[in-house]
Image 1 (tube, rainbow, N blue to C red):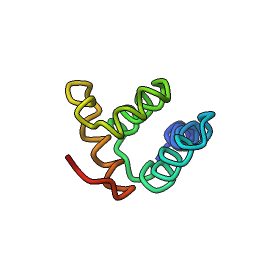
Image 2 (tube, rainbow, N blue to C red):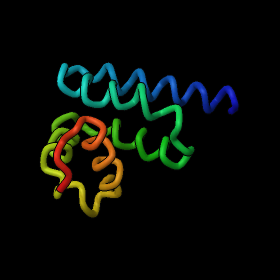
Image 3 (tube, rainbow, N blue to C red):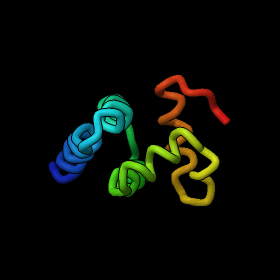
Image 4 (cartoon, rainbow, N blue to C red):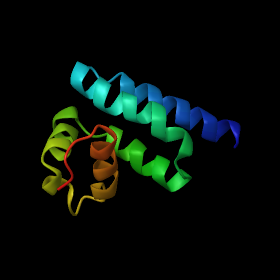
Length: 89
């Protein structure tokens, strides 16, 4: 793994855990701490795009997963929901 890849992974974990709302810090941060290290570069890029979205939009996709269909984040949202033990839809 290159230094650039390691830096991107560290940055993604930090950004996921320091969003500004406690709920999203917890939901995304805990997931990132566990999952980011094993993500492919494509998966990492998708996660980086997801955490670039506003908190309310991500929150809605997590708790109303049907909203994530057609966004390109459906599989990632399903994985995140599974990580937190939320019922799969």
